[in-house]
Length: 121
Length: 200
Image (cartoon, rainbow over all chains, first blue to last red; front, top):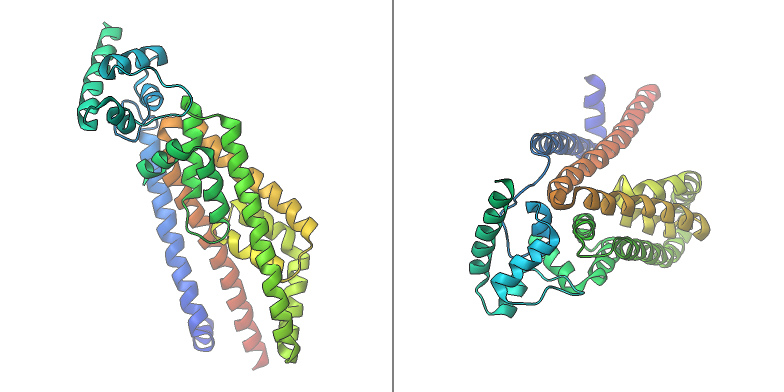
């Protein structure tokens, strides 16, 4: 304790920095533990709520839809040809197809739920 | 954040990955780790090609580090001029050179991936204290290989769970880096305290 006081008196700034670093250690350690535990409890993100930034392939992966089926469903909803080359997010596809993005997301969610329930019947 | 990054990658492809690792090695705050995880995930779902993602991240990182090293070299010349006027400064600089000469290689290596937040600083210090270019490049390339492999690899492996993995990793890196800094500073303070006691 005495030694700590001596250090504090001689190097007040560095000692404060040291204490600050200890606070960071605890903070990051705690967060790492929590995030890891959350992930351990729910490891695989299945059926992630569909969002505009996701690409059809990404959604297919998360919802366990075969890629050809995914492209067929997308084609039915948007009347657009399947993607070639550059990946496109759903937002972009909706805009290109002249549909409001939110509407496409809702329709796609419904169609994928149908597909999944049909597959498991 | 995730959506924004993903949007950038879908719009501009591998160039965004290159730019983000390049700039992050030069102290521009870029979420390059998350970017690599996201593009690894995109490779996993088939939206990108894995080797292209890895190659662009690697090229950006190595070129960014090299730029940081060169900036350090230029600044180092200025430091030498500054030190010429004072003996204590010269001693300090000489000590820095010795330390870097002894531990510089491993320091560069660890700062590229394990203590990633320190990376840009370490590159500049390595350049300023004239760590040999060949040694810097060897350790740096090795370290960046690990950095890129870990992040792109985990993004690829965990695909649609990449953002959860990213949160764990970024906190873990914060933990390891602050722990290492705390240990180093703590040891130094303890050393000073002991010395102060023996001088009394």
